[in-house]
Length: 291
Image 1 (cartoon, one colour):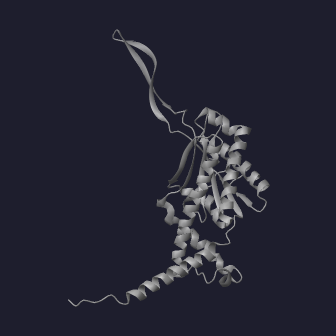
Image 2 (cartoon, helix red, strand yellow; image 1 turned 60 degrees about the vertical axis):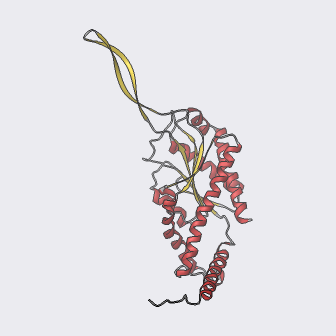
């Protein structure tokens, strides 16, 4: 067999470096003017999707109250930021419509607010006794209970299993580039349909994940600063975040199955503290992104 030498290895290397440089410079040009202008706040559940409850309140109601308070706080403190709600009343909004609202609005952040809950477990209790053939026999009943001691906050970002679902959202959002005046000058020749630029889309997708993790960390840090229990930042395969064309998080503000946290989340003081934590996290994130 005839040995065939590698053709122009130096030329191949130079070509690779050139493509990488073009991609890096194009991506930098595309993102350097990034500003936080629109935030979509999603109150979890709602309407018929609202069975999770504590002793006296439901997750859907607490989430809505918190979302509306947070939105008002953002509008009062960040005059240059527009706030959009996925729902402002007790209605059911499908998951795909929630993130579609954010994508269609070209939102810069998506924040979904939820309350945590412990799953029920089966337990057997003795409700009485009876005599059977002269013997005392316990009367047992199966009941379902929840742990009421679990507490703390945690914030989720879309897990790696969902990252590929962002491709479609990114492509759709970038298609609007062609509608802009002077788009060639604005984006220095960035072409969403160019195979080379598809790599840039992948970079953007990974940037969304990285920035989502960054925002989630800021949120958890603020919770910790006011004494909340930190259950950490986690990546999870969540449908509501999967197709986000922007950094997106889902934050669990406390356990509604814990009576103390249920009281805290429903109280005026608790609402103020939770929403101020979220506002400070958003402000810190905005500062880190915009410089």
